[in-house]
Image 1 (cartoon, each protein chain N blue to C red):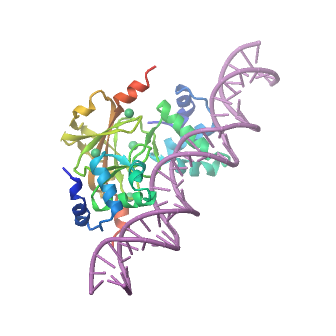
Image 2: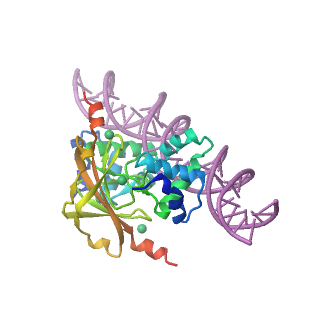
Length: 142
Length: 142
DNA sequence: CTCCTTTTTGATAATAATTATTATCTAGTG
DNA sequence: CACTAGATAATAATTATTATCAAAAAGGAG
Ligand SMILES: [Mn+2]
Ligand SMILES: [Mn+2]
Ligand SMILES: [Zn+2]
Ligand SMILES: [Zn+2]
């Protein structure tokens, strides 16, 4: 498990300079919640770090994603979410509110790619299970 | 296979009025390409139907998606794509250009959902295999 | 510690995709 | 033909994100 004490080392090992903004953003992702949006990160950090800017949050999480500190999740038509869990895993997603729950596969799916796929360099895959979470089912009852 | 001659019937069966705009949009999706974006649909139809509006394209494809005539695909950080293939299937996607190729599973993945998932009403799932297409590999060679 | 170079930050503007609003128009009904 | 629910087109508004760039800060070298 990642610990907030490791933050400066995590940043250095990723080849990034250590700044208060980066420590705050990485700290938020480690401590609070997986799968936060850029805006959620900004709103939370802004309380104790009022001078931080929205563009810094975007720059920083994009940087983090590039060096592999987080993984950007971009499905649904809503905002990107950022996942501090960088192990290969998959997501159960609520169609209404976008809540994500991690899960792991017991057995990978067996897929036969069609001829048109030849020459494609495959890097990884992601399974998205879609449904409605209990909270959203409750709130949409007639 | 869907045929352009069936378009009025397809619209009526879906409970939608038959209008030239709807015929044009559905016709484009059937004839030309699977997985077009709203803008691609608009740009193509606009040539022969100059009075059509961008908002009509959006309204119409959203309508189509609601009644099950097309399926909206929303991964990647780019624009939504609309799939005239509404059978359950999955996608190989190019990380660079967003090109999509359909594929079908031989065997569904076996997943064990965690306790947090209890109460979730599962509707369907989608496997997204990510990579780089031959064209994009070629164009990014040093 | 001080100076210097490089990187990062933050304010703002710009862009892209999409949704909302609304006046006008039209298909279907009788 | 006349009426009305529904559809269209023009436009404004919104949301998420990226670009620009001067000022501030980080990390080394001396
Ligand atoms: Mn996750
Ligand atoms: Mn498809
Ligand atoms: Zn929900
Ligand atoms: Zn490509």
